[in-house]
Image (cartoon, rainbow, N blue to C red):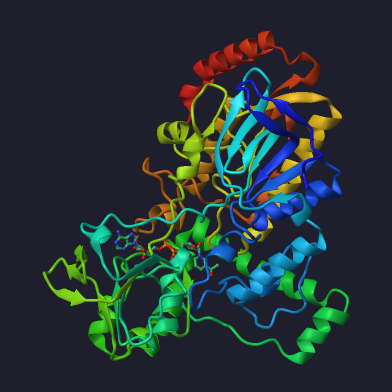
Length: 528
Ligand code: N01
């Protein structure tokens, strides 16, 4: 399909497909980018390692997988879905939605499936990104990383786990061939994924051991089927679904006050969660075990009506002693208890601030994102750019995550910014741009300042929101409409640009020199 694209030789001498913009990933972010670039009339390709669009919603097919953000909020603003069957959608429905949007906007035609990106390197001679993949090489003026934060499963480093002889798999790589019916199963972890898996399998396994390291806060889930009247209204009454969406958006946005600014305002939610727990678990010992010891919101707040009842089942045990080792047929707790199991479900989350994908992206100074982030933490500018990485944009980049509402809103904000950036480059015939270190540093100083009082930094928990430097480099610390305003237009003044006509090796050397000087004079002021 893409044979008509011009093929040239890269500096390395390998044939590479030339394209203006390469988008890596076709989840909500990558797909959205493809749609917006199509509308803007830009030349682009999407590289997708899987055989279907959908990203995390394609990969997470575990039993019980569903969204914990209301359905009406969890869609693109330009492709509302009046057909959601429930107020909180199950995974298959979300995957169908994403797939239907890809069809509607004809994105598959410009997507290379089964194409795993092995590495991307900024070429200082051609001023382009050399992208090496399992299906060949590409050369792109602009690279858009839309791989998402929840794409690389994190596996626990438990002694002996490799030697387990039963079925073992991560929640995001569910093995549907493995029938858990009548089996003894262990679930490791009690995060957003585990609390959906546990109730979905508790009724059919012989016995379930839930290994809990930290008890999560769980709130009631206001899930219900949409009525026929609602469906008709969403479909035929102009503005009805948008109104429902706006009300949900505004209600959720009020949580920002407690989460990001004054955690004392989280008290009512904590009260509701305690009452939920008391109502659903009567055994005082189990209640004690599953009562969290940190302020609500510090970790992601979970919603479920069937998690606690599942834990209270006679065939389910909650184990809080920690795991000492895994043997061929059992899990050994730290207190020495050996529990035989046929299968282990590893629901231990994802590499977020330490994603292995960072090692494969090498910028202007020959340094990978992993090296840069290792030193500074996962710092970026407006979640979309990183100094030292010209013509590279991120979707769902640093500090764009949320604990209270739909990521699709943040993604669409970023799309405004990134598409405007690409358009600006074209309009002004700019060859390369790179965010100025001093702008990035000042942006991060303000971010960390804003996060100082948040529940994520002060709630008394350890979470993947914080990196190894203790900085919160994952979450947006304000109202999401503030981020929308911030990313409305591309701000060229925050970037160092080189005109396309001036892209010569001599200019490359000058730009590198200027960057170094600028980093020396301002970089040390960065929040480290
Ligand atoms: O992962 P997590 P997840 N030994 O990192 C425990 C999104 N999501 O897949 O809390 C023992 O939240 C860990 O314990 P602790 C959502 O953004 C959305 O559940 O670190 N236990 C924790 O209990 C979410 O935040 C939906 O002490 C270990 C669990 O494993 C994100 O995905 C649904 C361990 C990991 O929880 C990730 O959720 C599902 C070890 N070595 C997920 N290592 C929606 O509905 C970790 N743990 C939209």
